[in-house]
Length: 278
Image (cartoon, rainbow, N blue to C red; front, side, top):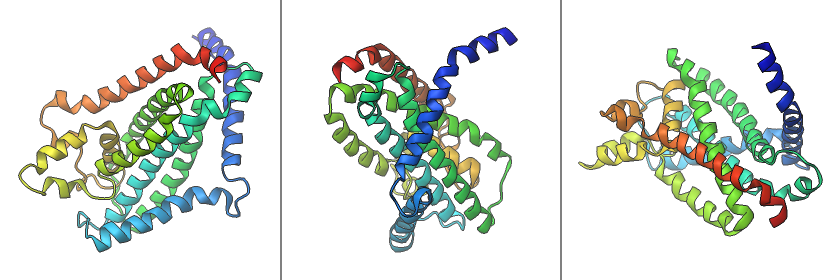
């Protein structure tokens, strides 16, 4: 067993060193030249939260009526921000690092992983801010908090799978960047982030059916699970408590695994040609 671990460590040591260096460089470059620096990783979602809260929760009255809703909203925005930012930055990562890939030999997938890791670090910082807000709002944590790492792993797998697919396509077709911008806008409003899923459930006689269909989207499912397990298990609907059929409940999880496997397969099949094409 020790020999196996040592072989794996030796095999991936170089990749790990390169990945660590790229993550540090990317994170420093992201805020280089700005006065507030890394503080923007917290301020940006907080400012977005203030706008969303004032417009949707206070002005349009889109709230579930619970005192924890502002924290649930902030957590949803932070989770979406991670998915959106990681896929957008990771999409361009291979092309942006084209010179480096042509000069230095190392596995191409590290460039994509490092781009998503930078967003994951920002997400971790934002989660600490959400935790502080949760304490200030006297959120009652339950044992379900222990399930949070599983939800974050699923969100990261989904994000990485989508990013592998998009970054491979972007090498061949630059239009992918603009198409993905439109898709993320549509996806944002199709996922219950700025409005509670309870509003969809109570909308009309078709509301429960629409809500169940929305929950089959893996992005919606995993963000609702994170909110449910971290902040509000009593007031956050999820695919697990809204869909009766156990097999149908598994669809978003299966889709996550399929997207991740497909992303890895497509990237692995095409990555040797990236340097020639660029």
